[in-house]
Amino acid sequence: MTETKKNGRLCIYQSAFDSRETVARVERELEKRNIPIFARFDHERNAEEAGLLLRPTEVLVFGSPEAGTRLMQKNQSVSIELPLRISVWEDEKGKVWLAFPRMSYIAEAYGLALDPVIEKMQELLEDLAKSAA
Image 1: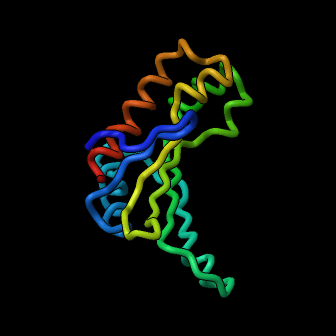
Image 2 (image 1 turned 90 degrees about the vertical axis):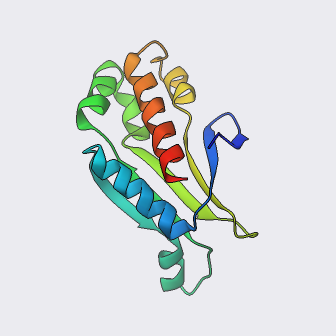
Protein backbone atom coordinates (compact mmCIF):
# COMPACT_ATOMS: atom_id res chain seq x y z
CA MET A 1 0.00 0.00 0.00
CA THR A 2 1.28 3.47 -0.80
CA GLU A 3 0.78 6.71 0.98
CA THR A 4 -2.61 8.00 -0.05
CA LYS A 5 -2.71 11.53 1.32
CA LYS A 6 0.01 14.07 1.90
CA ASN A 7 0.33 17.19 3.91
CA GLY A 8 3.28 18.88 5.54
CA ARG A 9 3.07 17.15 8.89
CA LEU A 10 1.47 13.76 8.37
CA CYS A 11 1.80 10.58 6.35
CA ILE A 12 -1.68 9.13 5.79
CA TYR A 13 -2.49 5.67 4.45
CA GLN A 14 -5.84 4.08 3.69
CA SER A 15 -6.44 0.67 5.29
CA ALA A 16 -8.10 -2.29 3.61
CA PHE A 17 -9.42 -3.40 7.02
CA ASP A 18 -11.89 -2.04 9.56
CA SER A 19 -10.53 0.14 12.34
CA ARG A 20 -10.37 -2.57 15.03
CA GLU A 21 -8.52 -4.98 12.74
CA THR A 22 -6.16 -2.22 11.61
CA VAL A 23 -5.28 -1.36 15.22
CA ALA A 24 -4.80 -5.06 16.02
CA ARG A 25 -2.50 -5.41 13.02
CA VAL A 26 -0.37 -2.45 14.17
CA GLU A 27 -0.17 -4.01 17.64
CA ARG A 28 0.92 -7.37 16.19
CA GLU A 29 3.58 -5.71 14.07
CA LEU A 30 4.95 -3.85 17.09
CA GLU A 31 4.97 -7.05 19.12
CA LYS A 32 6.85 -8.90 16.35
CA ARG A 33 9.49 -6.17 16.44
CA ASN A 34 9.69 -6.12 20.26
CA ILE A 35 8.65 -2.47 20.35
CA PRO A 36 6.72 -1.61 23.50
CA ILE A 37 3.31 0.06 23.39
CA PHE A 38 3.23 2.70 26.11
CA ALA A 39 -0.38 3.79 25.74
CA ARG A 40 -3.55 3.23 23.74
CA PHE A 41 -6.19 5.93 23.51
CA ASP A 42 -9.66 4.88 22.40
CA HIS A 43 -11.23 8.25 21.62
CA GLU A 44 -14.52 6.66 20.53
CA ARG A 45 -14.92 5.02 23.94
CA ASN A 46 -13.88 8.20 25.74
CA ALA A 47 -16.45 10.19 23.75
CA GLU A 48 -19.12 7.62 24.56
CA GLU A 49 -18.34 7.91 28.28
CA ALA A 50 -18.84 11.67 27.95
CA GLY A 51 -22.21 11.12 26.24
CA LEU A 52 -20.88 12.01 22.78
CA LEU A 53 -20.64 10.16 19.49
CA LEU A 54 -17.43 9.65 17.57
CA ARG A 55 -16.58 7.18 14.83
CA PRO A 56 -13.83 4.69 15.71
CA THR A 57 -10.66 6.63 16.49
CA GLU A 58 -7.64 5.18 18.32
CA VAL A 59 -4.07 6.28 18.89
CA LEU A 60 -1.24 3.91 19.75
CA VAL A 61 1.84 5.35 21.47
CA PHE A 62 5.01 3.27 21.22
CA GLY A 63 8.73 3.41 20.70
CA SER A 64 12.25 2.45 21.49
CA PRO A 65 13.65 4.26 24.54
CA GLU A 66 17.12 3.79 23.04
CA ALA A 67 16.28 5.57 19.77
CA GLY A 68 14.24 8.32 21.39
CA THR A 69 16.89 9.00 24.02
CA ARG A 70 19.53 9.47 21.31
CA LEU A 71 17.43 12.23 19.79
CA MET A 72 16.70 13.84 23.14
CA GLN A 73 20.42 13.84 23.98
CA LYS A 74 20.88 16.12 20.97
CA ASN A 75 17.81 18.30 21.58
CA GLN A 76 15.67 17.67 24.64
CA SER A 77 12.78 19.74 23.34
CA VAL A 78 12.05 16.97 20.80
CA SER A 79 10.70 15.05 23.81
CA ILE A 80 7.31 16.67 23.15
CA GLU A 81 7.15 14.64 19.89
CA LEU A 82 8.10 11.31 21.49
CA PRO A 83 7.27 8.50 21.85
CA LEU A 84 6.05 7.72 18.35
CA ARG A 85 2.35 7.37 17.61
CA ILE A 86 -0.05 6.13 14.98
CA SER A 87 -3.67 7.23 14.71
CA VAL A 88 -6.33 4.97 13.18
CA TRP A 89 -9.80 6.31 12.41
CA GLU A 90 -12.88 5.66 10.36
CA ASP A 91 -14.18 8.53 8.27
CA GLU A 92 -17.79 9.44 7.48
CA LYS A 93 -17.75 7.15 4.41
CA GLY A 94 -16.57 4.14 6.41
CA LYS A 95 -13.00 4.27 5.09
CA VAL A 96 -10.25 3.58 7.60
CA TRP A 97 -7.07 5.63 7.73
CA LEU A 98 -3.72 5.42 9.50
CA ALA A 99 -1.65 8.53 10.13
CA PHE A 100 1.65 9.31 11.75
CA PRO A 101 3.91 12.34 11.95
CA ARG A 102 6.27 12.90 9.05
CA MET A 103 9.66 12.54 10.73
CA SER A 104 11.41 14.89 8.30
CA TYR A 105 9.08 17.66 9.45
CA ILE A 106 9.90 16.93 13.09
CA ALA A 107 13.63 16.63 12.35
CA GLU A 108 13.70 19.99 10.61
CA ALA A 109 11.76 21.68 13.40
CA TYR A 110 14.27 20.49 16.01
CA GLY A 111 17.51 20.75 14.04
CA LEU A 112 17.87 16.97 13.72
CA ALA A 113 17.56 16.63 9.94
CA LEU A 114 20.90 14.86 9.53
CA ASP A 115 20.38 12.37 12.35
CA PRO A 116 20.21 8.76 11.07
CA VAL A 117 17.72 7.85 13.83
CA ILE A 118 15.13 10.05 12.10
CA GLU A 119 15.36 8.04 8.89
CA LYS A 120 15.06 4.77 10.81
CA MET A 121 11.98 6.04 12.64
CA GLN A 122 10.39 7.10 9.36
CA GLU A 123 11.11 3.68 7.84
CA LEU A 124 9.59 1.95 10.88
CA LEU A 125 6.42 4.05 10.74
CA GLU A 126 6.00 3.44 7.01
CA ASP A 127 6.61 -0.31 7.43
CA LEU A 128 4.05 -0.47 10.24
CA ALA A 129 1.45 1.39 8.20
CA LYS A 130 1.99 -0.73 5.10
CA SER A 131 1.88 -3.98 7.07
CA ALA A 132 -1.22 -2.98 9.03
CA ALA A 133 -3.18 -1.43 6.18
